[in-house]
Image (cartoon, rainbow, N blue to C red):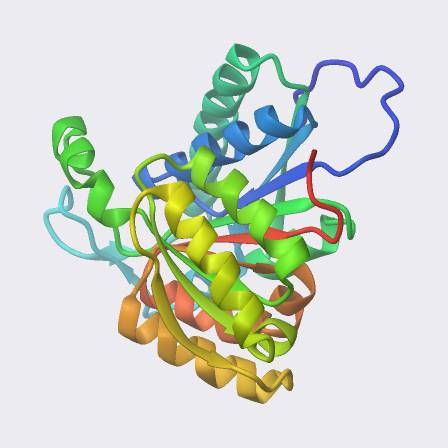
Length: 277
């Protein structure tokens, strides 16, 4: 299933790639953020709706039951009903994306696939692409007024900074695309070993933002087990709905992040090697 204006010979530069696995209040915010980021960079937005494999595995088990507030009692989870529900969500997500992209005068595309969310997102992303992944979790559909009241508190951005020249410009772009977001920064690898430069850059960013950053203890080691353990601890303590890190790190930590994302809805923004203009 694809919907796209013609891509008229545009040279292949970085694009914004969005991956979602459901349509919820949280993933609607992911669509809004992806459109905003693509608008800032004047680049194409490509979205993939990923049907979760684990739901189909669950539907294949005879004892699996579906429970919902609108159901009088639990009922068997049937594959046909699951397919219809996901198809409906995908159509709704496509309409929402089309409306937002057309209003922003963006080229866009939409497709549906099935598999692990992070794997499918990473498989499509080139090194120069900005990758936005919105994972649905245990969310309640709140009235619009309640969502607006709670938005400021829900938009905390945890940024994993690994390279000052590459990551800080993207942080500024993300904060412009996500108004009201507060920022917690965590240095790793190269950035964690440059304390003086890091402090100077963070001081300048604080002055620019007009509020203090929350600076977390960094992880100087670049080995995947060190990063995975430190990131899991930071996610557990802060429980941030927004996380940004480099695409190569996302690929390395995909399994760990998939577990963390299921504990709490998380928007992961994977920054490209070449920052959007």
